[in-house]
Image: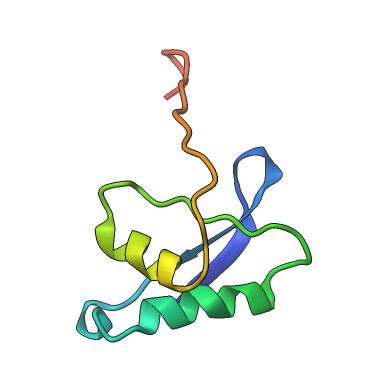
Length: 79
């Protein structure tokens, strides 16, 4: 599954989900590449946890590159 939408700061972001039985088959790489075909003509971001090694490898293999890391802070009382 591919999801493309607006994320934090109105960035165009995408996410993919691969069913467990298809993991390790290269489907994640193909989905990450396919997302660019449904995206608008602007940068497309994916937020991946550094601990999610499988996703990091898939996106790197699909041609994405890390551009930054961010830490979000929220004042207490808002969650």
